[in-house]
Amino acid sequence: MLRLTTETNGLSRWLELGAGVGLIGGLVCAMLVSACSVEQDTQVDESALYHPTRIVVQAPTFEQAQASALANNLKIIRSFDALSEQLGYWMGVFEVTPEYGATVADAVYDLENDAKLSYVGRDKMYRSAVMPNDPSFKKQYGLHNTGQTGGTADADIDAPEAWEYDTGSHDVIAAVVDSGVDYDHEDLAANMWVNPGEIAGNGIDDDNNGYVDDIY
Image 1 (spheres, rainbow, N blue to C red):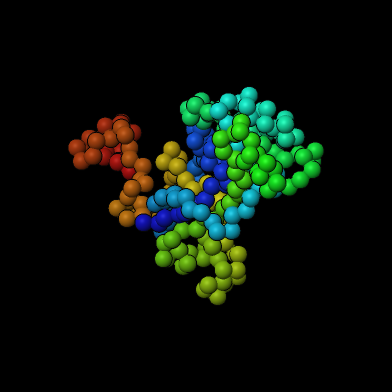
Image 2 (cartoon, rainbow, N blue to C red; image 1 turned 60 degrees about the vertical axis):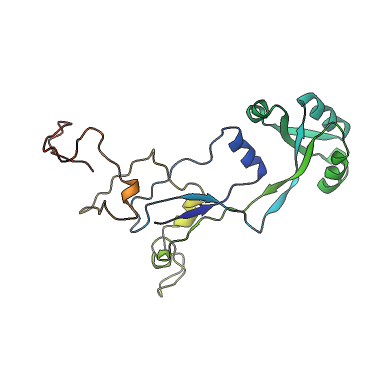
């Protein structure tokens, strides 16, 4: 089974997920030669950086967070209202403005000593890194060409770059116009579309489309 790994874009993105905001939608991979079964994992990139001006903050109430921001010449730029309602306390993002006159690290230090806040932390940002762990992926020069077979590097369809934006969805149905498909293949079986209007093996055209037992 082909497996894709991806990373989220920082703590703010993680919080949006907690609030029920989905990550990215669906990119079709059914046309890939041997890469159609997709699992998405989240892993931490060691090259993570902190956002240069943002601080993630937690406070018992929005009013307390607002008072802290005003007292420190900071600006509230994001309020995770849905998540805050679920958790029972306010969570959001402060931005260090020029009026603060110091670095984000200094602001974090000052805010950690603010009794009105229950959590303060730098907003981490992660570089997206989506790449299959399929041992045969390196043979797919049409997807990602590094010159591995003697060809021209980057003469490909930029599949990893596309996966940076999307890694597929079971809500998307892709039609493969070809001589056929091996729907029992281990990379395809779990992701094959099944005709809901047809009953397999009964010898009847259940959906009245002119084809008997057209399950796939």
